[in-house]
Image (cartoon, rainbow, N blue to C red; front, side):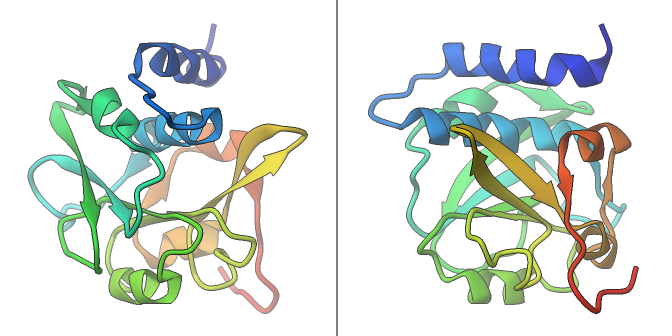
Length: 174
């Protein structure tokens, strides 16, 4: 079985071990995706040092699920940390901007830095985000804007791109 084929299995296993306590299945899946994105993205050497950090912007619909998923985990020999940020901050490798958070402020704060920005609104990619969750036939899926990733100087694995819907913004050049 290839690594690509294992991603859904890993997400499923991650969900079953997570303490969900009132968090919807949708957000448990999104938390698992955020954790797994760390395994398929390469940051430049000048990215934030220390633990690989997933930041949740504003309100936290993930509850303790994300923190429980990443506890004691390593990616490329680096520990993983999850934290909530109430305004744009340095030190994040991934910023998840839930629906209703101040999307423009978080994207502006991440602009020009090697941060994977992930949202869940229909206009997130148009606003400059890199990845976006959407629901298709009751399942959580994601789309990626490769040009936005390139501007952020992060490399997304072709394996992850194969799972994503690729979004090209009108007038965008790569």
